[in-house]
Each structure stands twice: as structure tokens, then as C-alpha cells.
Amino acid sequence: MVDTCRQTLTGQDTKPPREPVYRNEFTILVVDDDTSFLHLVSSVLRKHGFNVLNASSGVKSLTMFTYAPSDIRLVLLDYTMPQLNGDETLQYLRKLNPSIKVVAVTSSDSNQVSARFRDGVDKFLQKPLDAKELIATIDSLVGSKPQN
Image (cartoon, rainbow, N blue to C red; front, side, top):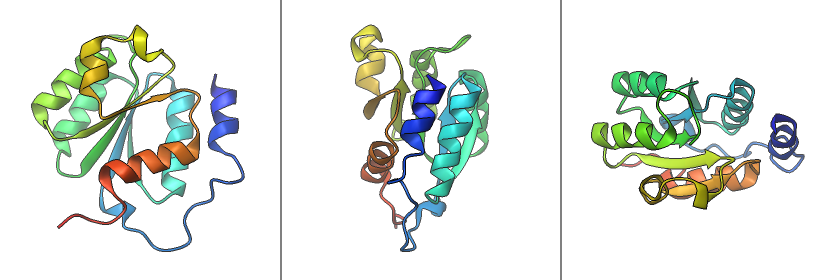
């Protein structure tokens, strides 16, 4: 799975933008228990100008979110994780900030996850990820320019 994602995420056509954008004005929290995938996605996001925080569990993500709620504008959230799964983590995130943008990034089929999770996320992306689709999704949800 990681090799497939690495090939997809590191494709030749996913060069960082040449024009300055304001992606570094906010942070993306990436939550996934697969550390290889976590680091790969984070690396791609950083190359595209995003500030990134990594969390290898739902519990860690909630701790990070509690300490940086105004900086984090989007969460990439895996569904299948130990302790707190994606659905449980999502419910806590929404209590902390109901307007936070959340993108489900999972190898689970959308029909295999709870309806509450499926309906609670802003976008559902299937692993292996396509870097262009990931960046376009993020830009469409939070934009590449700072909000006033």
C-alpha cells in the first residue's frame, strides 16, 4: 500500500507551485496510524507549501488540536485506527471546532465506514492517493489565500 501511495504521491506532475501562495498561513493535521504513509503525505504537503503536523493516533491528534486550534484549518483523517477510530476522533474534533474542515483519507470503501463518519467529513478520498487530487481538495476546502 505504501509503495503504491509513494508512486502516486511522488509523480512527476506534482511539482510545487511556482507562484507564491499563502498556504503557509495555516496548518494541516495529518492523522494516520501508518507512519510510512503519514510521513509520505506530510512530505508531499510540505513540498506544496503547507505547514503540517503529524499524529499517529486519534488521541495524539486531539491533544495537538487542543493546543493549536486556531492554526489548524484542515484535518486529513484515517478511519481505521486503534484506540480511537476515525469516527470517534471526528466526533471529538467537531466538539472542539464544529467548522474544522475534515478530509477522510482511508483505504476503507466509503460503504464500509459508519454513516456518521461518511456524513461528518467534508470530503472522502480513497487510498492510494493522487497528489494532484489531494492538493486540489485541500485548496477547494480552505483556499490557498489567507481568509480575512
